[in-house]
Length: 419
Ligand code: NDP
Image 1: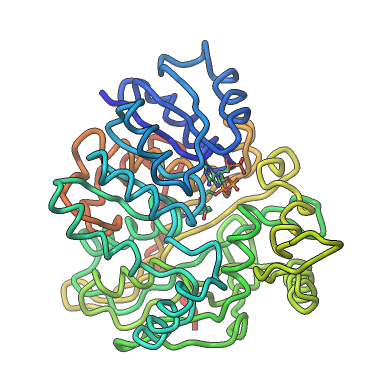
Image 2: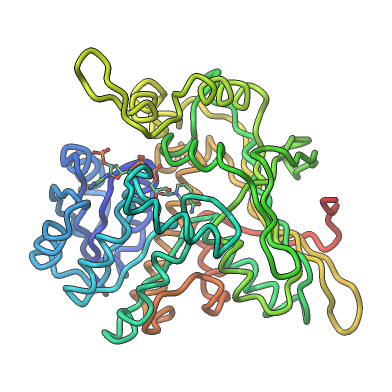
């Protein structure tokens, strides 16, 4: 049915690629292209003979628009899946526009160099306009709305789990369970244990920036920003147990506030263990999370990039991680004039993911929705010209695909609410 160019070959991409290869009737051809071509070749060798999908590989620096354009022209894909880092979102979107190809990613654009004065000026102006100070937000990519519309192309933003499936859950709740949704609490619980005192489950640079930033939530039409990790709750998660969770800023709050009519409050909570938080605070205090280069023995070193080199590669956590994730959305609202609540969630087992694709559940829960989003686009279910997030499409085919492709969901109609 289609040919896809996948950019990036890290933890998330390796799951998405393997899942695409399980649906060869949709993904007839895949080109895997990344900065380090040997990783693409290794994955191709692992998959060949086990799938009908034809796989090729290429080297690309996706920070360079011209390189991406040249690659797209040689591959001629129907869709580009950006599974590299959020730093590359804009260059890859530009290349897609230049070549008339549809686009998909799994996370909001953010700048790699947050000290760049030109970027900083725009960022600070947007902070004042928006009322939150996260380094990532939708404005950069929503600015492409008209360009994608004019060309009749679709850009699907944030097709991972959160963002991603959490927005599909919201669209499903709105379509089938509620007449009005008053509050949404998105809960992201990772009950997995990898045995290291400190490691991140996905790209450490992106992860640590997100977690060390101020938190914020949406209430009564405005953002409320709080110091990092200053709102903590305990929650008893099905099949995981009691965990501490902390309120974070998260990108899907911004699009849901726009797309779920009448919603009064949206919050996002993520679980962290004490060891993770103690390490992160210490690293932050000594300056290891900084993105500002320092000179060391005549060499320029970016502390957070150096730290990334020291930390375990998230792609290697698979064999060591045991336990489950429980991620979903708690809704409060009304149905047929009566109050109603629901928790729509998925439980995913780290070791089961490892047995299937050689990865832990964080890469799995992101890679599977990336494949499903691409499948929705290639099969013509999610195609409308412009730039969209998942709650803007019919949730039903996506929900059906989640059950079929490894992320079954369930509904608790009487969940414990978060105060
Ligand atoms: P990794 O660091 O494991 O992989 C990133 C990949 O991108 C690597 O293969 C890397 O190449 C490649 N890459 C980086 N820079 C470039 C470049 N300039 N040109 C070409 N390739 C490049 O990250 P993850 O797989 O953990 O994360 C991938 C994405 O998924 C991120 O955007 C992350 O934010 C997002 N994510 C989304 C989630 C969700 O639920 N929505 C959850 C988790 C992650 P190299 O091997 O050379 O380093």
